Image 1 (cartoon, helix red, strand yellow):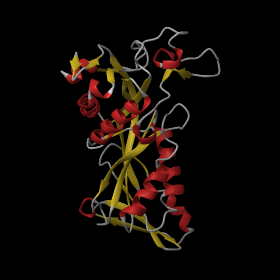
Image 2 (image 1 turned 180 degrees about the horizontal axis):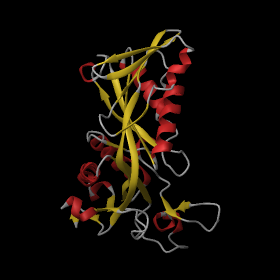
Image 3 (image 1 turned 90 degrees about the vertical axis):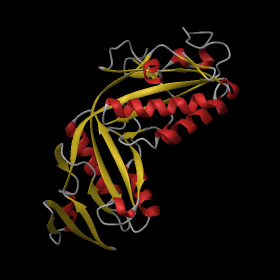
Length: 298
């Protein structure tokens, strides 16, 4: 398959089951809602070392938020429910409770309830007040700028992590420009996040390492500087490879994000140094969800 001079490899991205939740952060203005959201989703690129994968889903207008203020929707993904609940609560306590003018609400209805502000209320030292509105429980926690309003719980649902594609280009600037174009389009798709910095990862990995202590190591087959010393998957003109990883609430969500992202890369085309689109997989051994590139783009 070739789109605008870009070869779409006959391969698939391999993904795995995760647990996910969504939270809505609001504040006095969009600036402070975003500051809180960025803090809450920091150091959350990969479950390999971060404990969770998190990202900003989208900015919310006042008419989309529970309290009628500007807001940001964030999503957190983890390998299990216990780990997800711990990450959500810790991050909310350290990054939203602390952030000026912030409030915190559930972003998923249904699913299994997990604590959002349920335990953060104890910071109120006995002065906290419970409110129940339309069947939902909220907590008002006194803080120095007024009060912190938080919903007690949010929903946890089944999700998928590790959808991905690789952009192979003639130079580093061209690969990055293509990925930036892809991310701009992918951010328009609901129910997905791209958890790496700016949505892009340059240190794509493979399972395993020559060092027993490491569970993952550099994907040498796609490292341009190793063409002469490893079993490379790169032709001579490829000098830069970057990866976009996608977590989503369903296979269909990830399909949509991959489709618009790959199309944005292909729109730049071979004239802008983009040569191939590939994907990371481990022969089907990593996870049960397979995203076949040519089927997605058919």
